[in-house]
Length: 534
Image (cartoon, rainbow, N blue to C red; front, top):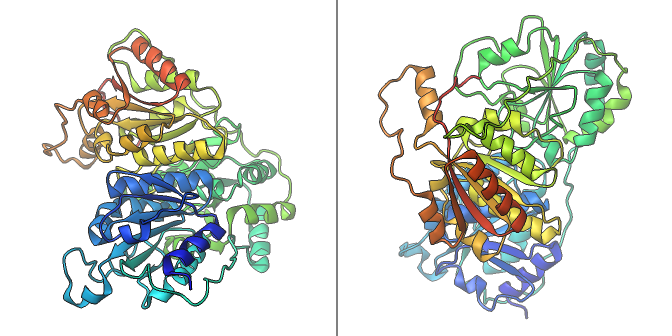
């Protein structure tokens, strides 16, 4: 008779889930004992890094990843990155050990009390099997829940004494649909609305990238000859940013969004919420005389949209189905030419963010993966490094710091495991760097090619910009003196460099990008603040 452990590992093999990212604890060792040779265990030093690395790996490989963390204590550490994975729509199967069933009633040390409730609402499904024999089937259900749209993390709490129990039959391997198709009648109604519009505008979100719909999105935009705006706070790039129809990024506040959409009688949102607003700036949701259509794979996003009519569908299936129903248009307006970004200034010290990102653009060429968690200079990054290739840019959908650094490690692991082998570059603020610095250990130990460019301004600049907008002077805790990024990175075994000039940075980045390995470059940047709303 096979054991629960045997049946579970066999099921995971059949599902192709042979990579586990984890930080082992006492309640997980019974699952991990005699770890199979055909599985890969990726160690991270803290559970937030575990979840972030798994998220990046899952997105890079386009498949679920097993996350193994330590009972309720580890789950608590991981929750910030699990929250981000939920909003990123990443299909993680998060597992945590539970105390032995014989002692659960006593709630001994390290019991995960009310284990199914703890990760809610940031997982799609949360479960602790009632019987040891149900563990393999619970994994099958977890997989089915994670990969169906909208994808997302799920959670299993697994008592440590279940693994050696016997099961009388293997878990049944099932397949499920990974995409939701549009209702045909609703699709026809949307097509009529689009054909009747005089001056539509498109707003594209990250679901287009997740559903591999770049080419379909380009065809849709070119059929309508309509400008394309990237949705606010998009965690994945949905449209080539050098395309003539790309009109920039929509601002993230109610009043400015309305102003940006003026002149358009129909707003067509594909693969994005309506909208990610932050901060609060009052105004109308839409200009007078304008209406909105939203296409999303997430009923919750459709339900909470403040305006507009929705259609539930995978982005790619919608775009492929709608284009044949549309009339080819000639351009009703010319998309305004984008301003030429400032050139790199190699002589001014300290260098500006524009200079640093311009140098990175020239060195990286076309083959790279870029991760961003430097909020106060994201505008400079966007104008200096246009993304024109799918699956090239990643950031966090939640706004919670600490995800991007381990995610860059996971993405680098995905690049190696997939054989694409593109270098991963992470632009990280010196404040952001502190949230998940432990993830450097995994990058070094796995010998991954990832370059962390740490933008050092010794402050939470984005919060100072918020303080100006919100007229809240003298907020404490916004300065960050005394951070030694290089010493921290050396402690984890990374190659390091402190760049004080633009030319120094250029030489260090060129070397790190081309030579491989894990490198941290700390570069001092000019501390100039800008308007939060651009």
